[in-house]
Length: 437
Image 1 (cartoon, rainbow, N blue to C red):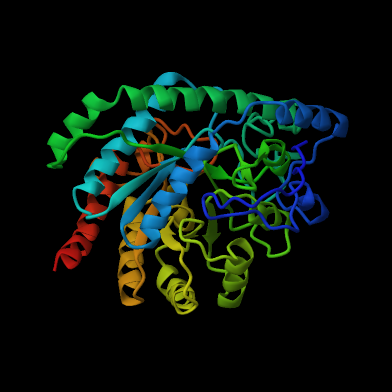
Image 2: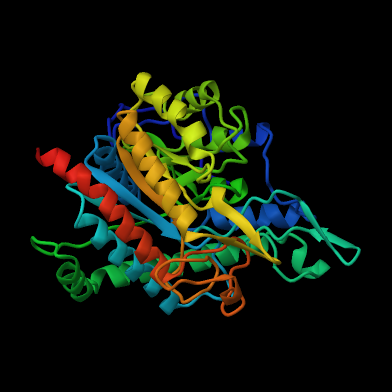
């Protein structure tokens, strides 16, 4: 279990945030927790939690503070968030080359975006923690056999067998080890990336001196046993920090105002994302924003719209309008993936045209509402997969079977992700011209 806070001493302002006095890392256990695994062995889960609680933090508080400072610039309309990575990380497919290709893809996309925007690009990878996914149904039936749904490698396995689908808390230890290695690899690639940066600057026409790119990590704060066990008290800031990643987000299925996920996230000092789908009403959003960010601190809260290209114009404007009128110092971004999933035969897929349409609508709505379009959130991979349709390679439905590798949702491949970044660079260019005017 996470350590308890020591007695209050002289208050030291640090990172402009302090945890609520009525909050503890275990408080979420008194609330209803949606989308949690049904572990058959409670004792095994407790033993795993104790081991994780004795582990070193995965990320450093100083780096989380750095991210908050970067996000505060975006909140002040001086930057853009590029958030992307796997739908759900895999144990079986993990290797150093996969981490490298994701890292390089984010660098390439970031360079395209920086060439078009006057502000900085915040590189925020969906990595080193994205091992679990919420599911619309708790079980799956095939051939008359019903088993628990696959919830990601940190919970159970994708094979349709009782042994694979039974939630096993020891998988949390495997997720933690893979996250450690992934973060070590990201640090190594960051140290060795100057050659890549010079090449990318030349390709995109970027000017100015080369400087290191900070690659931050993010994931959905879904498995609360895992998150609590790795939450640490920091005396200088008098705050609790989730050390599983630099930024956490709350999903559209777990954003209940009085639920366990909101309760946990309100007390940690990390930047927090909140997915906003079509069912979210204005009053509910404003109450969530107040619960998660009562001090209204720039850099604390990122709202991530995920409506679908057919619904974004119906739902997003009033939500943006409400947060602007309330004077909230937050960032609006767009997730154009989750609302645009469709079926193609037995496969789930997404159309690049739908993704681009939702992004374009997001920019248009933000400008009409006087809100800074602050970023995008993509499910993508540096690999040559065939899971989404369209893009410059013109993938069609018949291509899906060639390299459909995801165990959860379809991802953009490298070429499609670059297509999206190039399109967004074109949308950012008017912002740069406006700033220069």
